[in-house]
Image (tube, rainbow, N blue to C red; front, side, top):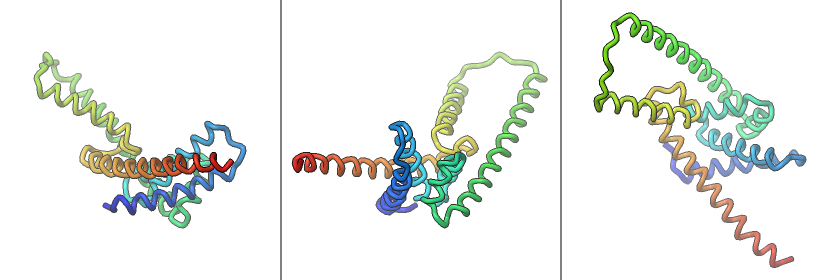
Amino acid sequence: MRSSSSLKREFLKKWILGLQVCNSSKNMSVFERKKAIKLSADVAMASARKGKTCWSRALIANASSNENGEELVKKILGSDYEKLKRNSTVSRRRTRCRKILKRSYNRIRKAMKRSTPSRAKRFDSSSVAKKMIKKRTQVLKSLVPGGESMDEALLIEETLDYIMSVRAQIDVMRSFANATETKNPREDQQW
């Protein structure tokens, strides 16, 4: 894993580039500007990881799915765009295959349950714990980009990496906001 400071520098560099690209269109509403800032931050965070993680490839694929996002992704990623685009397409295909396998496995399991005589369900601590773990895993899969197609071990690894990247993103954005706050009072005094 990369150090936090190098990740922050890479994110800031890519994010500023994304903000410059978004700022080129002057006629934006507040909502459109908010979406552009979030999109540029997501793409910058994913590109700082250089597509080495599943969540970064999923973010790039999601951003590339609409035409405005694809232009932003191309400009931020530059020469790495084609390579990462190919990797995200392969990842999307794998996701579809896993979903199909999972669906068919669930159908077979349900058919087998119907064929065996039903037993009274026991509510012991292990079954309750398994249900809680399954529910929390589903929540975690919905929070991490591309998490729906990950198994539990990969999900934990990707979640840890995603949390580190989001923390770096928050630190950079907080520093950026603090810098603009301290700059504004001086400008007001000059006027």
